[in-house]
Image (cartoon, rainbow, N blue to C red; front, side, top):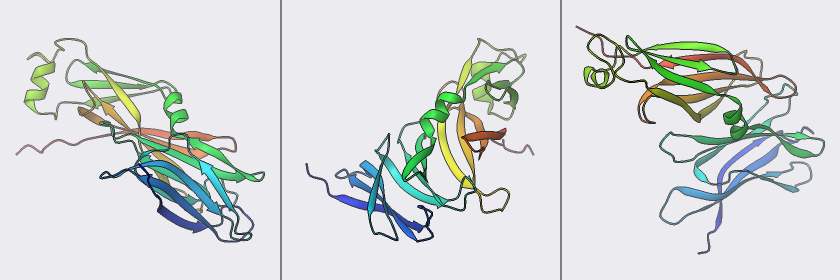
Length: 235
């Protein structure tokens, strides 16, 4: 079935670096009776020459594709960020950042590369706790599970707080990527979110939050934290 290409998003900024205001379009084809988009690509119209440059995406289908323009490298030229939802149960995204280098747009960030680089182990401990090991960053986080409801805990723990059986959880691929100018200097860092899951995807224990900063070659890890969910107050 023929699907017409549409503008899904449009942003204007100096992405080529010659001082002219360029226009960046996010183009895609919408599937019938669905919010799912296919054949997504970024197209840059040079503000000085009016020429068009197409930027293909490795994963080019998904929900809610969006554009963001901002300087991630500190060269005073805006870079192009594309994010789309995959629609999976884990709330995962595909995300890319491109910068104009030596006459063409080159990738600075690829969510698949990020997912392959950051590895974790998650397992439950006695006395209503879970441990998250961030292997690359060489940090350990302990999550207090005691605020979970009694039914949840009774499925996993004996009355004395010991595990009924060993349980391993997991950290999902990247679920959120947000540009944040932490230093307020006009250069954006990245804040990446990953779900920490217990026995299954919807069994959320919290989020791994990784702050990434461009170091001249790649987005390196600045800091990594774990955010947890609160429980109901007693009394």
